[in-house]
Amino acid sequence: MLTEEESEIRGIMFGDGSLSRTERSVQIAITGNKFDDEIYLLRHVRPLFHGVFGLELTSRYRRGENTMDLYRYSKEVALTLQSWGMPIGLKKLENLILKLAVEGRSFIRGVFDTDGSVYRKYGPYAQIQFKTVSKNLMSFIRDKLTKLGLHPTRIRPDETKHRFLLCRQKEVETFFRLVKPSNPKHLERLKRIRLSIP
Image (cartoon, rainbow, N blue to C red; front, top):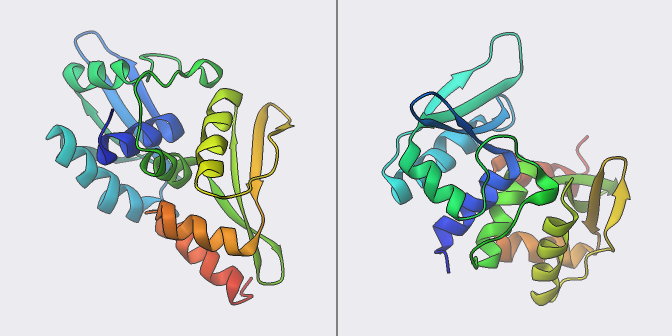
């Protein structure tokens, strides 16, 4: 079974990560919005990778885009991530396989911080959304949340993806308390919704 930190990294990679083979190595990259995700990537993801792998990720800002990456070349670390179920090359989300047992809350945190969202239902009421191409991944996360005593909606198709929600207000708070999201944008978004700030 993966440790809490390893489980979170696997969730991050399944969310917004990629492994790309080069002539002599493999590039590990995590992509985010340079405005919304910069603090999270630099202050949380980078130290997390350094702590687990001793790997110092470099930041890169794409010119003319709102996108940034943390990246590094390391065949050794990439092969470890591959052994956890992360493919090298094109990431076909529908085929993602959880090869090793994870610490559920940490894995969910990694996926949610990179690929989840908090949005206003109406007034001060918030909803949490998980949405991805992989129905298997959605089923896995939904099952873990159910075992934590939460009541997510059924998984529904949404264009090319699958999604489910957490709508009960007490359970939104419970999710934040149990999963402990690390991306400040989610914490700030929930705060603004609760205070009815647009």
